[in-house]
Image (tube, rainbow, N blue to C red):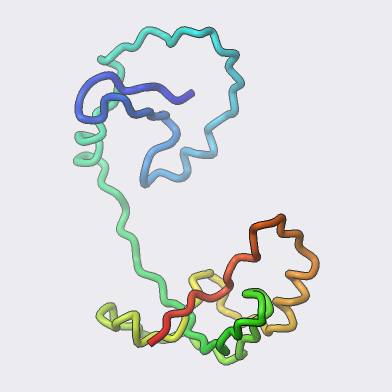
Length: 148
């Protein structure tokens, strides 16, 4: 269902009528359609192609509000520990107002998930022991650490 744009500054890129930035509800209307290749592209009609620059003027993107990160202190990972075996302290807090000007190097670590609860190291190890991670991949980091 994606069509190629043939004119304008976006020439060569693809678009879909239900895959538009700022309109996630349209995705529900997308249907998978298996198309057997014919070796030839359909004849483009530049007059039917959308002008995304005009669309942005008439339908601006919704305002995005910054999230409040969950601040956690993490135990350092020793060289002999796998990343998923690191023990994390269970002291987490959600700041009431995190100023946007706070430098990231002042934050020891933060969690970007929407979940407001902390997970103990035992829970993390239990979850990872039930998961399969094919090599050379490792479990994803739970916390993004920033050293001072």
